[in-house]
Length: 195
Image (cartoon, helix red, strand yellow):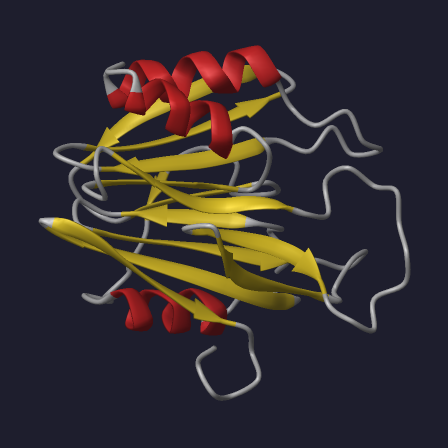
């Protein structure tokens, strides 16, 4: 099944996966303390504004992680840094940026992992934000409402790998986060070396 891009958020571990039929030539890199989705060197040129973005950022001196499928990750991070409660930062940024205005009205999905964990989405017909106490998934297609999800990873590297290997079609790359006081991150670009 193709569910598009997705986030899995648990109380202390989370992951983001790029799944794509249209733009598979992408990878995640570390840049300026963020994890950023960028085209690979062999990707055809595009002016699509949804292809490259920060998918993981940290706030509160590295104690909180924000992850998601687009430019909304930045304003969520800025609001958390300014002291907004994570739930409010997530809801306000999703509502303000709305779903993507592409051919599919693609939902935006995001999560925040800190002292408390939240997951959210904005679709054409709803804004949904939930606190999570167990691993929960939300995706751009098919699984576009927060749903409990069997996710066993306990480290950032394992989270990235498990998200990448999840039984959903068209995996491109993945990022994992672990919160153990501070946020640790990992990248899995599907090339077998965990980077």
